Length: 311
Ligand code: RIB
Ligand code: CA
Picture 1: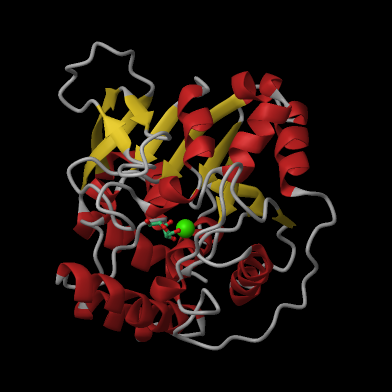
Picture 2: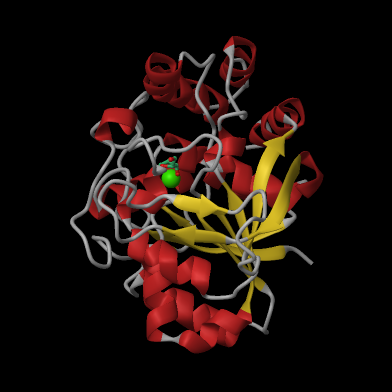
């Protein structure tokens, strides 16, 4: 029986690779893709999600438009990282598959209410606006969620958009506070892990050498996407942030972390969106997240290459 998941996303090149990994993996059943404003505005994230589904030859996937701005703040986007289309690096045809008419938040609520309790996993890989809005509108869904496996936050790595905050949390810190405080089983893939999941020449060349269109598209995306992190961190290649969530569902043993307390800063302008992770357990606050700290990068890329090659 495949594991049922909903991917909540703001594509973004790394989101695209996460979606492809999920669609290439028979262990997972993607019930739907819910889009949120983040890396680029909502009209582009909904377009990009469908471009990726069609690249994977899956026009049957249900794609939903969600919130077009954070709960309580102006939208901050990241064209400087992802380009103005959000999928810069290669030009793919405009999507022909339809966008679903239902709102993403209604889809999240209805699906969690209709699927058996504890059988749907949420994989948020962008700002948490859709997830938090669904929880606020229908608190009864919280106890029905099997697990939330999200990409966001940081502890040792601290911030990538400000000195203190990671982008997904920073864009909608109020939403993150709701999700981290909801009490649903929560697994967090922070920058501490994703900055170890770096592409390199060998890995990108392996994508480029794949037959078909998918591997070369992933190579082109990472070639574009890596320049920001290379300039800023001097890193060897692009950090494949979002695919870490899907890889965790497929091979959790690739990752290690701790059950700890994680709180979200929503008051201070200086540290807004910081994930205050009690990694050393000094506060006595109850654990609310499995916060990952390490990944077997070679194993992660072996999985990713093997699966993408199937598309
Ligand atoms: O900080 C990394 C996160 O921000 C990733 O999800 C990336 O896609 C961007 O949304
Ligand atoms: Ca993302």
